[in-house]
Structures are given as structure tokens and as C-alpha cells.
Image 1 (cartoon, rainbow over the protein chains, first blue to last red):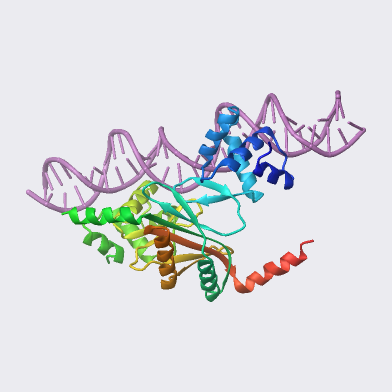
Image 2 (image 1 turned 135 degrees about the horizontal axis):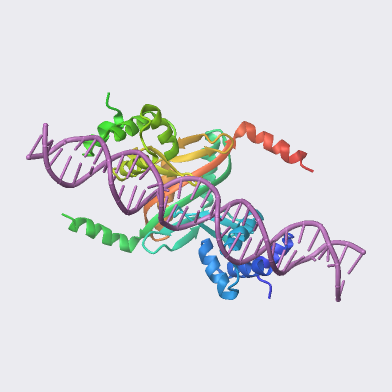
Length: 148
Length: 148
DNA sequence: CTGGGATTGCGAACGGTTTTCAGTATGATG
DNA sequence: CATCATACTGAAAACCGTTCGCAATCCCAG
């Protein structure tokens, strides 16, 4: 069974090696934002011979081919997600590390307008929001009060 | 002459050593977003004995004391700017690397609203826009056409 | 002035990533 | 289906920004 990403790679004319097939499968099945080490861990479960260097190389290849997208969440390592047509951003739950994707056409428009007013045409951008769940935020408030 | 940041450091009760004085001066005079190496380069011009390790340590100290703010522009190294009361963001000119600061209350409000709708309270966030000057963007369009 | 804790410079260590190089697999070709 | 140039791989070393350990030095309260 060829994975979704493997099919995409073949469309783009990439040479399909065993390792790339495995990594494509791993990425097709991922619904989170794994870093290279995590991708390697999952790939090694399918074929233990895959080296981390190859994972690094393949991630870059797939990124260049626009099959996946690099996400920099400021934690010092690159994370990845499948490339999508629509621009979206990330809200990171600072309590759990959970990542929530969201899109906002209004935000895009506003961003576009700001750039134009500054005399620029946008070629890329990124927005990340770090937050805590509203109900747990109450705990913070209580903690604050307790602090002498 | 004590620099603006040096005064701030003393207010915060930081022990003022010669190195910290020099680094404070450098940062007070900077109107850009230097990385550690650049700060070290400028500091060394005033006192060549300052080591890069001390610059790293001092930048972290000043960041913790909220005298300066770390800016992650995705180029793999930390950049810094003086801490300010108002939230602002950065537009990076991808042609020249020039960084333009901007603020937008509407954007802040929208961001706040998005987080609330997702059930989150914002504890931090960042927005970066990468762009090219509008007039030079025309060149890109022409380049596209020429490409066969 | 003096003492002792904080700070410094140096170099080694670190974590994520890239590269080098020799060996191996791929898929276009005959 | 065998051949072969070429691209790919694994392992280890190199890299780059950053942090750490340690002995020497500095700052400043007493």
C-alpha cells in the first residue's frame, strides 16, 4: 500500500527508495507535529536500519519539494506537518504542549493590509499563540492571590 | 556617563561589573536587533577583554531582568532588543534583512478573540511577516514572466 | 581595606543539524 | 533481464550557536 505522501513524492518525480517510502508512510500517518528525532523513532519501528542522517536529508528533500512544511515553534528543533493549500497558524498549549491549528481569513487580510501600508509585499509570515486553557487560567488567578 | 540600560540595571539591583557596563552601553546605543556575536563584536571595540561567554551570560541576565527581549527571527540565532512596554511585531525585508517594527491594536484584539474562541487565554505570542518592498516586488513579476 | 560570594575567561561539552566518504541501491538503458 | 552511471545511505566527524565547569579575578558590604 503506497501512502498518501509516497504517491505525492512519485508525482513530483522523486526517486523512491525504501527509506523514503517508510518516512513517507510515517508522515502520512502522523496527525501531530513530530520533530526529526520522533520521525526517526517511528520510522525505525518499521525498518530499524534507517539512520537519523537519512531522516534529516529526507525531511529537507520533502520540504524543498513542498510535500511537507517546517514549523518552527521556538523550542530549538524543527517540527513538520503535511503541506496544505491553506495558510494556518498554531496555538500552543503551554501546559501540555498540545498544538491547535487555526485559520482566520480576517487575520490574513489584516496582515496583508499592514504589510501594504509599510510598503511591502508579503512573501511569508508566521504567527504563534501560546496559551493556557481558559478554565485552568482560573487556577493561575487563584495562585496569584495565594502568593504573599 | 552611565548608559540608559546601565541605570535600569542598577535600579533592578544587578551587580554592575565593567563588562556589564560595556554591554549595557552597547545595547543602549543599538537601534537594530543584534545577535550575541554582534554585541560581542561591538563590546570588544570598547574593551577587547570581554569574552563571548560573558556576553551570553549577560544577555540572559538582562533578559531575565526584563531589561531586554529576545527576538527569534527564525535564522537560528537569538537576537535582542530593548524591552518596551508595548507589544510589537517585526516585518523582515527578505532582500536586505532590514527589520521594521510595527504594532496593531486591531491585530492584538483579533488574536485575543481567536484564542478565546478556542478556549484559551494568551500567555504569549509572536508574529513575523517576511516581505519584499512593493516596488521591487514588480521585478519578481517580471522575472516570473521571463522564466520559460 | 579586607573577605568572601558573585563574576569572568577559557576551553570543553552540548544538542540539533549538516557534511564527508566509502559502500549500496535505484531505475533508465540496451 | 543484466548493466551501469548516478543518486542515495549509514556512520562518524564537523558544525554552529549556546551552555557549563573550573580556577582566577572582581565587586562591594562591612
